[in-house]
Every structure is written in C-alpha cells, then in structure tokens.
Length: 148
Image (cartoon, rainbow, N blue to C red):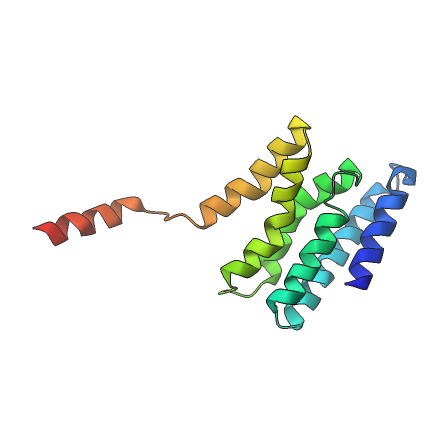
C-alpha cells in the first residue's frame, strides 16, 4: 500500500497545478494506476486484511474530504468500473463491501450536493441494481405454483 498512498498523495498535492492541456494525460495516468493497483490487490489473493488496508488508504487519501474534488469525481466515475473489470467472478461480499466503503464514508463527511448526487448515481445505485433480482415476476409465479 505504500505505492498507493504515495501515488494518491502526490496526485492530491499536485492536482491544482495541473493545467487543462495536460489534464487528460493525468486522467489516463490515474486510470492506469488504479487498474494496476486493483490488479495487484487481486494478485495478492484478495485476503480481507490487505483489502481493508487498501480501502483505508483510499479513504484517508483520495477519498478523504480534504482531497481535491477533481480526484473525487474521477474516482466516482471510474472506480466501480475498474472493480468490475478487475475483480474475479465470485468475489466475496465482504471484499466488495470493504472496497466501496470509502465512498460511503465520503458521503457522510461532505455536504456538497453535486458530489453526493454523483456518488449515489455512479456507485450506490449501480451496486443496488447489481445485487437485486432482475426478474421478480418469475419468483412470484413460482410462489403461486407452490401454493396450488
């Protein structure tokens, strides 16, 4: 986690000095680094202690209330997609919960409506939809058939 901590610390510290002509390059750098960080986490076996350590670095670094809003918005828009792309199928619920927990902490610590709305739309709602049954009518038909 030292690389993760130093990378996001450096990005946060230098964020306001990045001119708009180079911003896309830094977004690409953050996208690639995030993917590699998550892949390294997967390669380590996704043991819960390591995942919680990674989540703590994210919570205290780029997803802390004092981090630049641009980094918040970048992570809100890209983190869940990177998780879906990197984590293997059948990843434990505790692992998912630990990895998205920093977003819930952030929601509890900021009052900026636009950021709260974006976290809700880009993280919370997709997680709820991913874990809800897609076709509830099949379950209702099965229950009715069992009664008769």
